Length: 421
Image 1 (cartoon, helix red, strand yellow):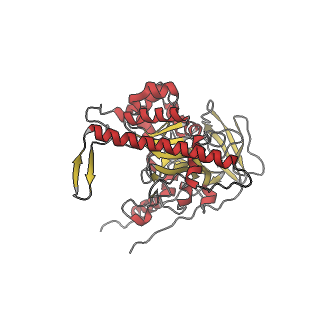
Image 2 (cartoon, rainbow, N blue to C red):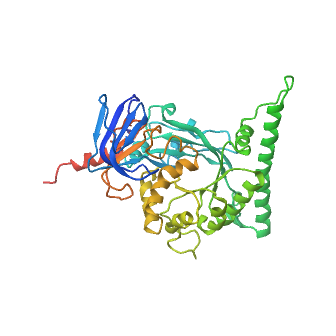
Image 3 (cartoon, rainbow, N blue to C red):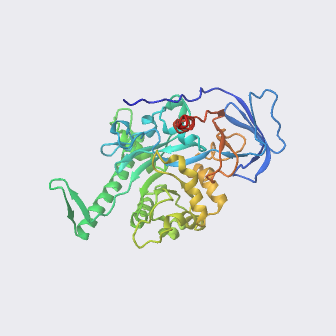
């Protein structure tokens, strides 16, 4: 019998909280030793000369510790996927093209993965649907809350499009065998699919025009899918294109330019092979796992490790994502690997915080320790990119949340088992 031990999220409550005496790393400016004051979920004051107010309810003594903005995992399936091998716990994909589906509406707030991820310093994540090619809309959520309404940061930060691949081999389900295709045939199928994506954009623009210009006696039937694509078509939302191969990245950039779209490349396994293109056009890239194998057999072994540094030096805005749920807790070490292979340490921290928020249009609320921003903070005993660093406190929207989770409970349980006679 499967027994689930649920961990209750913290009860949302307005608190006056102060973190006193720590080394504060605001990301948006130079580090200093001082105090951060939080009131009703917002950063009220921060600086070397700030004092904790008299009415403080929670006072954290951070002397000898470090204060950072909460880490931002810029692409996950948290809340949509629990156990990969159990279909009943998977809710990240719908059938067909569903650009109107919001990821946040499928999030399960009691997921055991949430407290595990939070305990390692991540306070908010992008959770994204898959499928498609029009997969749906990505949402940004807090890693704390009883309900999705409490967790929600932004219902939609972009429309997810999974770019088609050019494949010369396909599986034939009628014969259960692999069928070889001529390159010309595969290219024709690929071009047809890309043309169909363009047809979606044009249809969305026509629909948008018809809806906005409909007279009092004219009715235009509502189409939720076209409405979602129309938001990307008019530049209100970016198009978040999941593309890995160099050809796909080039074609996605050309597609966005042709149709006048704001583009963010997601996953980007081959992105470092297109640094001139991406850097010249300042196309942001949300990188998939850095701790991965090379894409091609002739690629250098350290290609994925070095890619973030190469992109950063080329002027490409970058962020890090784990593109799953179960490994989301390892986010800091993805960036750490990139640092070991050439990425500047400050750039890595920025990509995990303010850089990710800027790419997704949330830097007015998240990503740095500045007055007026949401109080998503972590208190650590060292650099959060170091595996030996312990996270002492995680503050989500001003609440010092409980760090216990399934992993910590198992650790305590088996640490206390009786010794053998």
